[in-house]
Length: 186
Image 1 (cartoon, rainbow, N blue to C red):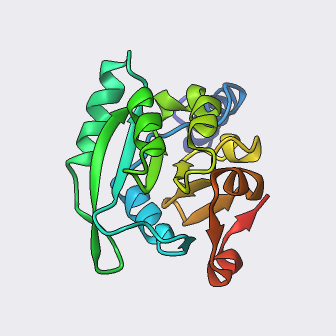
Image 2 (tube, rainbow, N blue to C red):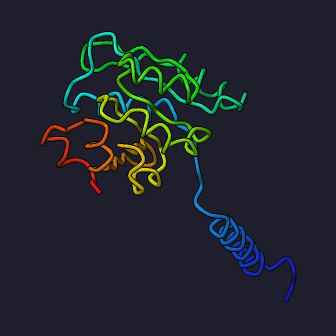
């Protein structure tokens, strides 16, 4: 066949794209850092938590202490759009894993959003927030499925919220009945 044939050319491009997709899928699921929309979604979800966070609560974006790129990404998120819990503004703060556990124990934080760099510490964080009423979240469902964190929130490509009953119980958190109808629980 002629190399300039449009059908052959399209088939070659389709085969290349399928090969690239197969390689990407073989490498495992794509992981994405939290976005400002994910932070907004988490803030809305906090409105359905029992007990409700106190006025002036902090939503902490947690990064691994030894990762300067993760710290910079967390600081960018914390410096982004302001978020609200209903009409009450939430303060955003970028904190390391160790700082996050200390804040949770002192009850100075309403929620911890674990960045990708902090996910390996999810079990340590779960032990640190046990019984504090602090909500833990990430954009990845894996730690929720392993009962390490309470919520997985993802705003794109569509809104998804996955909750762990066991992790919520361990953290001392309950959810409003209306919220439970909107989410997937494990």
